[in-house]
Image (cartoon, rainbow, N blue to C red; front, side):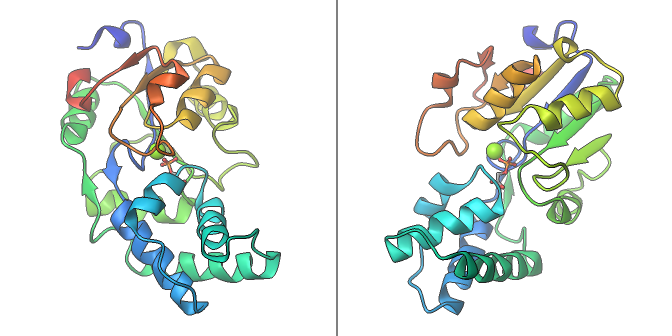
Length: 221
Ligand SMILES: O=C(O)COP(=O)(O)O
Ligand SMILES: [Mg+2]
């Protein structure tokens, strides 16, 4: 067991870039939404740097890059609707679970650790994606970016999780790949653990000063 788990009574995981490499499917849906609007594709490498603040922000960044300008509100709505439709049709066929993630989730569950999933991804996509990897029964609670009024980096989703489990935030751990996960964890009073392999707008998540960093989630167990 990793030292950071000492006295921890709940682990909250981020999804995209932490448990699953979802950018290939996100990029296809973004590019299809752009194509519907007659715009050139963004490509996976750009999309990787735009993930992290939910689907609307992802589409807004893609449109801003394609237009080289702030997208008009109506175009953003249209683009976002298109993205949701395309992504909903095929949210995981190119998505892979990261090495070590399944071992960590299985090991923690076997040890009786309550787990939560706190993603900025829209809630509707969580269940189908988890089911595709056989992970739908691991989490006692799942929150999407649209589950509450506020999303990460706001601490609200993590405070909600701690309250639902009747726990003090200091007894909970947030595990994520981006500065939004670490900022949310720090603001909520959670302990924080980062993985360096995910999506953090092209920057190092170590700059956010998480309590620790693991190269693979397998190190947790
Ligand atoms: O949808 C996003 O922007 C990122 O999702 P995540 O919070 O699971 O990394
Ligand atoms: Mg993430």
